[in-house]
Length: 116
Image (tube, rainbow, N blue to C red; front, side):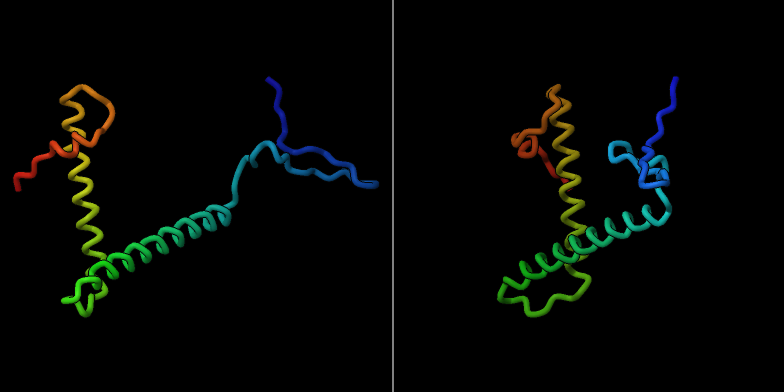
């Protein structure tokens, strides 16, 4: 089995320089590249969370009886919504499996019964 290098030798004047191939990714990434990618993903996630919390706060303030919303209220409300959607999805999936299907449909969600 032949080894193919991801580097191409390019002659420039009197010297030869190794240039990384644009087709193949480098064999290893440096730690700084991983850290940068992690920071970017973390920043995007943080921005999305802030936007969601601001939207929840705006919805809560749409009620004329609500004057102020504490900082932790949108966070708690978002977590409660997340837990509700997870529970609804899991109960709907049980209905899908009972009917020997692999696709979640609108009627599966409607068939969920909450006893608590």
